[in-house]
Image (cartoon, rainbow over all chains, first blue to last red; front, side):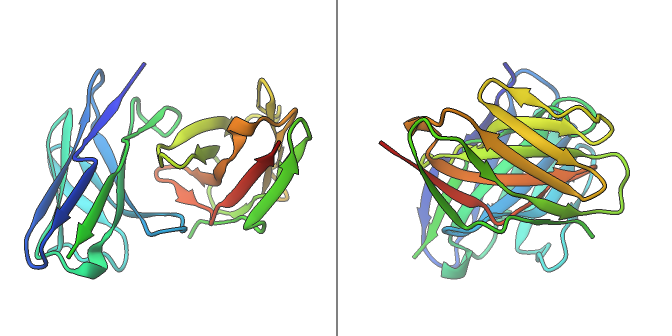
Length: 116
Length: 111
């Protein structure tokens, strides 16, 4: 079946550094990728939607310059957390629809970011 | 704006019992999808069941079924013959171009 591969699964970094998270669609072309953040014991909050070949669409309240999203190809989208701070520590998850629309949506396995 | 509300933060039932998780939502869209996802301790999101809003027939997947009331904007999940492996966080979510998630219900199945 369709798979979205997300890496790394866990990353620990120092405050002030940047961290890149990758999501790849392994056997389908993902023209769209959704990026979510999940704090402990909370729900998934949509951060932004990346589209191949165009700028990402950010949700209200999400800092574009802090969370850089690049959809470089039809199979790869990246989220870079720039100048990370402890409050950015969270679980980040990506998901991609296989076809147009949300009928068939596939999630990555998530990345736990811990900023010291 | 779309909103999804799950009013039951936690639920607990005995193995083999039936349990119903409630979900209400609000949207101005006419065509959209509704989903229930399960998130076990691994935190991998697992699709439980999907419903297209234009379909009146309630979706079923083995032990899982939904009661979709479009006019009332309600989308509850019924789990029959519950199993220990059903223990997880369950999220109700809906959307047309993007998904909005409910707060989640932590379901525990006791032996």
